[in-house]
Length: 400
Image 1 (cartoon, helix red, strand yellow):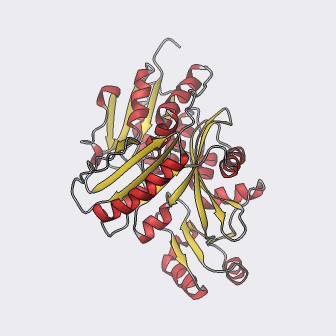
Image 2 (tube, helix red, strand yellow):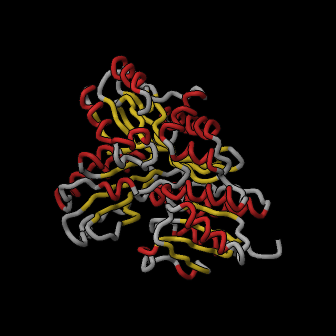
């Protein structure tokens, strides 16, 4: 290829700065298409050749027309959505412009909570009992045969956004009726109490080439609905849990059909039966500073490596992830009652990152010892609650 690789990044939210920087470091021409409200965001403009602003990125015809007009003068090699909510639009543009990458059918597996459950179950992966919110008779049978409580989930939302926990059939039917024509955009699922995990990984040529198994101390659902501190940490690397989760991550990838990219996949281990259930997956890096935690434990930045593997594919080169450190890290994030919280009293040498965000407090600790990370996280959760915690859900941090 005699010209630079051109990567078009699509995003409705401010994120992916390191992806943009790595594309530029690799000699690419970098185009950013984002929304007007982010015009003044702190984008790494030195890494971006041109920025294009639109009122929003959800109008199919408008976005197709805009990017097609851009394609009159730009040879676009790849279209990469930096946020989960832009996955469908990116796939639509790829299909329309015939640009390689995940198409609309496969993207559905990574956005639609009903589709991913059906495909996973067909592949023999254990999932919680569920039913589409469509035909009344299967819903009625589900409520009669699957023990309460249940969770009603929007099929196309991210993380814990919009999920409702329901405990009796009348409440379920009333909530469904209130949804009106939006009911078909939901799935009803058995609530399984247990510990929630996430595996953050990279895929290349249909295989997992890097993965980190992590366990939420407080998962997004609890934070979003009950308030509190969001926390997660690396699992002990030689544990049965970590090995099982990495194996399940491979099974999910193969079932759902991703060829290359970044993944954030969640599982739950039931308290009653000890079995691992697939909850959901997303074709993106994890939010809420999970990327920074992964880098603290391994030295691998998922944004950077996602850019590298996309560029390698365009150039017809092989991609190999960097050699990863086998250390441990933990993350703690909370809303804070102070405008700019002062964490200078937290002086342990294991602190490798501190959040700098209005009305937020957050830290990452890293150590060769999993026990040391666990000890610090639990100590800091108590201290942060006393020193900074604001009594409202930290939903923004836990789900972005």
